Image 1 (cartoon, rainbow, N blue to C red):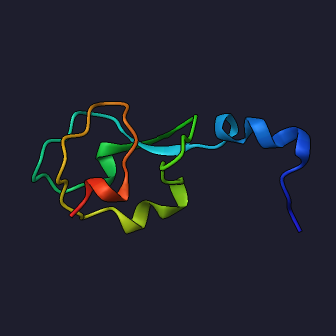
Image 2 (image 1 turned 90 degrees about the horizontal axis):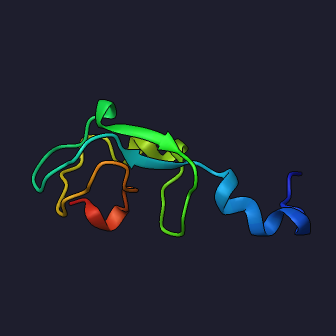
Length: 76
């Protein structure tokens, strides 16, 4: 069983990757896999890479800048 050790707890945000945009995505665009990248850190509200299938094909309802994380609330 894997667990986060106490000495790792504060650095887990830096260690994890988040789904981010690799270009500016405007309102109404449909997310494609080529629009996304997986980079550190993963701030609160960021989606981990293993959830990418949940957001591919979704319509963006809020403009997302290059390098920004994708949140479920940004999608329709």
